[in-house]
Length: 172
Image (tube, rainbow, N blue to C red):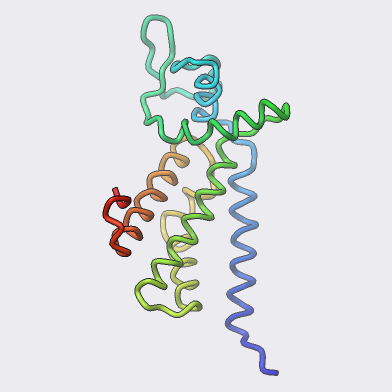
């Protein structure tokens, strides 16, 4: 039996990459504004109830602090925050980011397959996009600014894949 060393090398790279990204995304993030806003949403508020010490990107209006960034990433943290509150755990936006990054990796691999690349070439393309571009820093840090960029990139690539598949109603 002849071993395909390129395939084994790719598998090892992908496993290493998943562990690396998981370590970055799931580590405690001091800049977790979207998670804090998710806590506020669960209490029926749209302003910050509590705010991390290092969050400076807030808008003060009538004695309340509001987040000027989009709400989609905050809405995406609500299920994780809800589970965290139910289990008495401090779950933050990094858990959602990890899922989005894995989805983005699959979408980039799948788009390569849609363009006719073989599985190995599509895997190389996915690794190049996720590690040899500015995405590397964005996916490794779960701060609010990078979390918003991962969310936007995920939905942008999802829209492109759906457009390629001619799912016009879903592609945005």
